[in-house]
Length: 179
Image 1 (cartoon, rainbow, N blue to C red):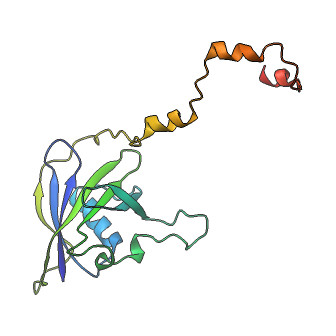
Image 2: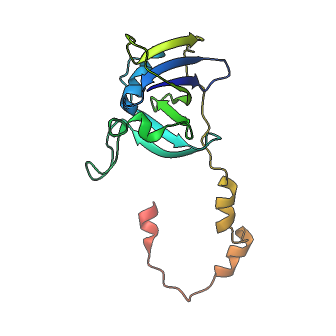
Image 3: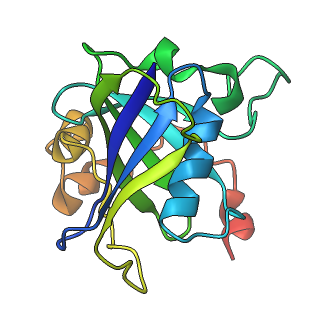
């Protein structure tokens, strides 16, 4: 079977590529097809991320094994496309170049029979020109403000006066370490 993907660059402009690739090709093959179709040189690190229907990022599948125990982490070449994506699970996020953070929304648009004589992967359609720079990303947890609230004790500078003159603790004389 042939998987047909629409790969959309996460920018304000409409920039996308339609790619056809065999369902038994790997995520690494899709990675290669994406960076080639967008004109990258392929010299940067990349990862796919599984996601839910509303593009909420889940598990990372990297290009290389970066785990503490070699072979413990699964990488792109370990996954066939059909292992990750099907008509029920159609979305995956692709990030190329972790310095510039080129981010792509990859969606399985169709599953069709293979065309005789066709060579896959193939870029079927190209729309839009790549910008010179990636869109700046702001990664912040949804509950970032709640994190600090958990540690808020309600004390301010005036409350610290209560410790002055209290000799119930031992002074270890570490002041010289802070000079």
